Image 1 (tube, one colour):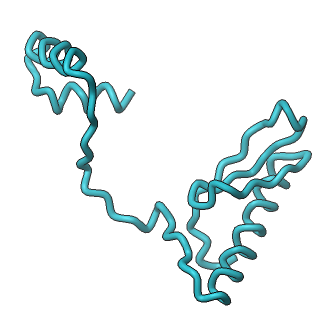
Image 2 (image 1 turned 30 degrees about the vertical axis):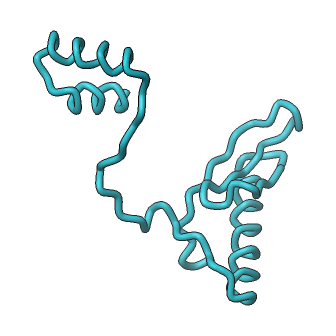
Amino acid sequence: MAGDHYTYRVTWSEEDGEHVGLCAEFPSLSWLAKTPEAALRGIRRLVADVVTDLDAQGETVPEPIASRRFSGRFMVRVPPEVHQRLVVEALEAGVSLNRLASAKLSR
């Protein structure tokens, strides 16, 4: 699976009674297994198969999150009263609204 730079996660599925392997770039895929290691191996193989099929069909293959470039900027819309409360909180803390929001999001 050379070149596999996708973002994987393994978690427990109480409903299935097994570990489930997931891939952020392919949210519709999952793999159930008795151990976390087997769930990771399974989802990685499944993603590799899907990428091979997408390539063969001339379909677009998702870019790995790790390969993307991020600007560090995004817009968040909040209700006006939340905006006002955050501005007051930032002023009281002696920081910019941007610094306050960044600190809250980083927790």
